[in-house]
Structures are given as C-alpha cells and as structure tokens.
Image (spheres, rainbow, N blue to C red):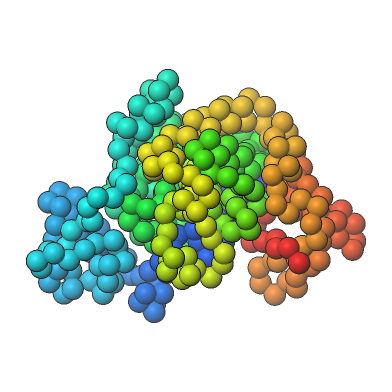
Length: 355
C-alpha cells in the first residue's frame, strides 16, 4: 500500500494516514500557519474560544470587535473578518458556496452526496474522520468557506482566504482491504485534473504522490486518510484548490503557486466543486472495482517528473539521493533508478524534487 503510516487507534478503529507528504511544506493556501502568526503553537483553549466566536458569527452574522480583541490574540483579519461600526462581519459580494447550486450542477449525481457547507471550520478532513470513527459514512461531502486548522504534511496547520479557494472533503465507504488501496491518492489527482480541466483550467500536471501543478506552479493538493473498523473501511479524501489568490498572497508563499483564474478558468467555485465531484465519482468507482493498475499509464503521462533526474529527500538526517524517475507501480509506488539499481518508494516522509 502506498505511503501508509499508522496514525491513531481508538474505539476499535484504526486511522491510517496515506501519503503523508500530500501537501508540501508550503501549503496551497496563502496566509501563514496559525502558529506563525503567534510565534508559538496554538493552544487548545484558544481553538475552543475561536470555535465559540465562529458559532456566534454563524448564528447572528456578527460579533463585537472589542470581545474578539479582549479574548483572542490572533488577528480577526486572518479569518477573513471585516470590522464595521465596531462589529466583525463576514465580507459580502463573494463567490460563496451553495449546496442547492452544486446539486443542480451535479444533475444525476446529486442524489449520491450528502452535502454540508461550513462558513468556518477547523478542518473538513478532521470532521469527516471523527464522523467515520463514530458512525458509518458514505458519500458525505464537507466544504468550507474558511478553515483555520487545515492539515498538511507532518500535521502542520494552514489558513485559507475566506471564500476564495476550495477546501473540500469527501467520505466514502470502500469494500477494498487497506492493503489494496495503494495508489488511491494518485487516482484522486487524476480525477481532479480531469474535473478542473473540464472547468477550463489548462495545462495541469501531476506531481507524485498528490499535487497538481500548472507551469511548474502548485495549483492543488490532496490529503487521503483511511478509517478502518469492524464496520469496514471509510476513505476520507480531502483536497484544496487555489481559485482566486491576490498577488500579495501568492508572493507570501515560499514556493511557486498559481490558481484557477490564472490558469484560464472563469468557472465559479460551485461549478469547480461540481466538476471535481463528478470526476471523482467516476474515477473512484473504477478504482474500487479494478484497483490502481488501469491508471498507471494515465498517471505517468501527466507526471511532471516522469523520466526526470531528481533529488530524493528523506526526513531526518538521511542524505539526499540522486535518482531518475522511471514511473509508478501497481500500488502507486514511485519507481526510481539509483546508483544501486531500481528502487520502489512507498511514500512516507519523503519528497522528490527535480535537479
């Protein structure tokens, strides 16, 4: 299985974290991590306070600026909030998500999904993982206008501009054994590439194991997690897509990034979600029946590093190694040529970069 690491065990449930470097060190979202804003890790008590404020905002549409400033160190602007006459409110006139609109665009596929849209949430993936551990889920979709504890590589936290990117998690049941789910994140990448191209995004490439790039700039990232219990396996697929970043936001990120607007798409966010969910349904159904093998050629054709000389970078003190990328195998592993011969890389805390 590709890149699995035992992550947690609770309630006779095993959570497996797949493709642990699915989001690069510099995530797809633009502002810095919460801990960077404070200069220290975020405390659980602070997360609880933030959640209380968000609940009031969702109910009343506003909170007092003075109350926020008195209780929370993080700047409210980091959450996309605006000050108006001493009140904090969500911005107006934005490209907001709408479940009814998405359902209409999904047409015959709409009945398959149970859709939930959140104005602000810690993490769509975390919510679905918790639901999968406590009850059965199948085809639940959670979307966020803003998430403030999105998870990427090595548990890092990330912010995303309010109502200007996509933060989506899809939960599905799977009849496949955990050992037979290798390559899943690569299949998700192929599906998102097709969905976004249908929505007008041009020139998408994939980067093993789970990034989407355009013109050597990152457009989207994927986080796949598995919850296994006596009730079966639940697949949690999280993906984030840059849609409409400002120039300043792009400059604030420590790696080259781009967004759907800069890549030729004029589709609104609801349309982008619908295109991605349609493609995911088709690709995941095919994967469920046939595994990763039918997708090998398709992934190699889109892989930006296929045939390239690269550096293989491992966590810890392991030195970087020069390798040549030969392709991917039947379980989604990366096949590389090294000085010692052919080697198969099954993910984990590794990344690969062109020389």
